[in-house]
Length: 316
Image 1 (cartoon, rainbow, N blue to C red):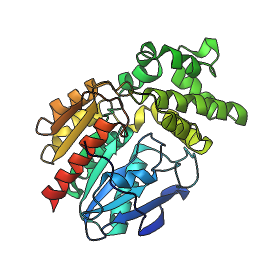
Image 2 (image 1 turned 180 degrees about the horizontal axis):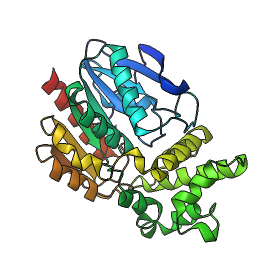
Image 3 (image 1 turned 120 degrees about the vertical axis):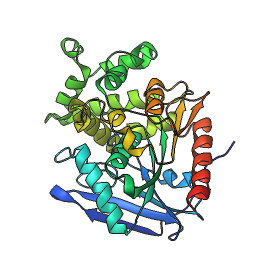
């Protein structure tokens, strides 16, 4: 079973001013003359991490990480102002042009899979391929499954903690209730809600418990951006049309695409990946039998690195 490549450091870091006062953090590592690949992180609002560089052979890839608006090392932190899916797609295109890249491979999981698909559907000529993990289609039923009724039946013990910040009379619409608190002026209530929101996601993301993942999601810097930006996007239906990803999938059927999904993914159930594969039947589709949602589960990591190794040969 393949594991992550050794740790590496970026050869370049930068900040890219984009519209409306936002400034994106980005970095490059690996081979400056290699195959350009953009790591598209999840959330929305999750931010990138140093280990994200390690899914790619550093001798073959020009590895580009960036933090989407409002999260990670981008500024202003946890901002939901002028922060929509259209802004993020425009930011990715601005980064491509800034770096002088003709085409790049997109590597995204969870929300990163959705954003990668949406970017590719808008800019297919600028996309050399996609590696997608933990497919999230951003439809009402997909959000409702995880934040109202679905996953709570699988993790009723963790669900109690998710409910705690919300008054009983508001629990019929948890997304709206969380959004209200996370955009309020009550700093203590905001942080309490942020940690509950983030802990729920972390605890449900792996087949085996991961204290490291829960600890990362509970970091106040991470939790606040993740919770505020996710609720902002989800109450606004991800700023896309209903089922937009599937309806526009024909625009990218000609691209090489690999889909990887854990059999026991409780954050984004496998039905979403199956529906995407029906719309993209030429794509490679790998179901990992002993995994949930996280890219760091051994079976998922193994499949992701096999995919990047395959694309390194294909795109060389």
